[in-house]
View 1 (tube, helix red, strand yellow):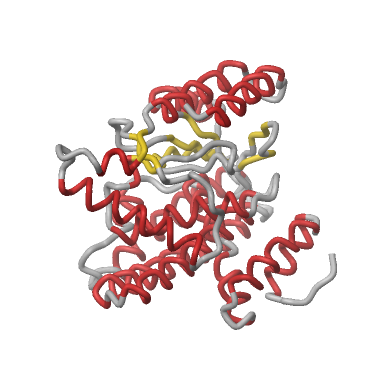
View 2 (cartoon, one colour):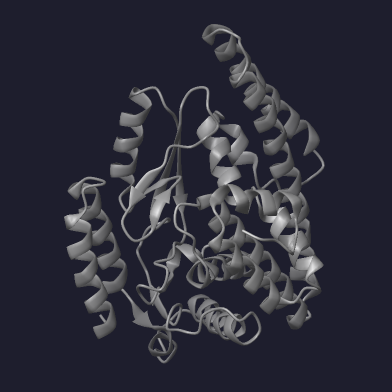
Length: 353
């Protein structure tokens, strides 16, 4: 482990265990999980020097280095040692996130931590621990959604390695994840998960589009553009039903009626999705819709996608100038959360907090 990271690790131990905002047990698993990631890191260049490395891994790690260089030179993302090392965790996901909502609410439950503030989800390095805590919340009456995560950002506290969990899918996916997580290192506002995730998603979209255009890879670019069309349709459907459900939850209907209508709306949403995507061929959201939908599942989408259209429209208004876009986004950090939402809703590029 690098000396710098040793110092950070000791500091985190002190801060986390002095915290009273959540259990020592939770922080313990977080620290152990982070330590496992750091312990398994290997410099990518050292791996590439090994003649026994598979051609598949070699190709992917070379792509990682190219993406990393592009991220700093062309996207202006942080230049540090993140994604210059690799860790094989020997599992499909690095973290499992829990989203929890009350039965008649679309506002996700928040968990608060020192340093990073409050988040609209809770992550576990252990799948069994995540499942146990999800079951506990479900028994308390919450709608629960538990999903595996391929990557996360330590916000610059550590030199984040690229993980085997990030290499399981396409180059487009890898680029999206890397640019998203690096965007968190560049800008992160405490206690505003929707802003942070939407901003990072917008940066990732801009970055992947630029990456594919400079590669002159029409096949990958067409594939990415098609995936974005599908995503817009998916998100629009989620947002539309979120609005319908929100009206229901704030209505004067009794709980029994709300419960019945809620169930019917989610079933209608599933039916509508499968009907409208019959011609898609590959269906990226089939798994999401094939299992039960609830408030928490909707929240997992809203949290990451709510403000993405606003950020992308603002980027266009700024003539696709990334430096100005970053400056604009950073200036929003001085506004209170309500003002930030108002600015993003109106897409104004000139404002006062």
